[in-house]
Amino acid sequence: MLISLLVLVIMLLGFRFNPFLSLPRDFLHIINFLVGFYFAVVVGHYIITEIVANMWIAATGRKDDPVSPFDTSAIIGWVERSFYIVFLLLGKPEVIGFWLTLKTAGRIWGEERPAKKTICNDNSPPTRTIYQIFLIGNALSIGYAVVGWKIIVWLPKTPAYAVLSIISLCAGSLILCQIIKKWGVKHWRDKVLMSVCNL
Image (cartoon, rainbow, N blue to C red; front, side, top):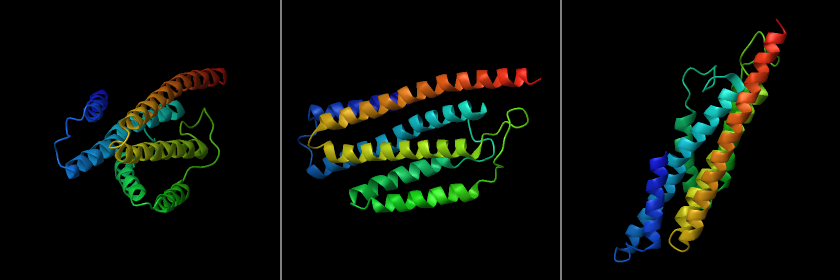
């Protein structure tokens, strides 16, 4: 992930010093699209995966959803962030709202967990926790897609905005990841103490 961010920063700094001035304008547009999509899809994937994995660790002690044997979330994230950028570029953000409605309905109807769980007899998280992890993952996915879209729009005119948006979103995501890690350690320490006290 660090290498991906480094490559992206080097590409953006290249625009600041205008090494492509002699290249045709269409080529510059292609580079803008590649940088925007790369940030949203690839960099977004690594950071979102790390945050969601830490949330699962905080909720269950495992890195992924304990019920799902094959998690397609990462694949869906790659595809949807690409489509989000395309729909934003086409000026059709309502399609994103429609897609999120379908995802939410599918997630709600697809849950088969009982409402009551106790710490001692079951390690799976309550449905509310699962849904909150789902919402945070979606919010981050939309955030990375929007920044990728803005990179495409801002890069030719104001590269400083593109660089600042990348730095602020990545820094905020990494801070969130650290907060989740600290919360997860406290949560599991409390859970172990409660289960020992109940023995």
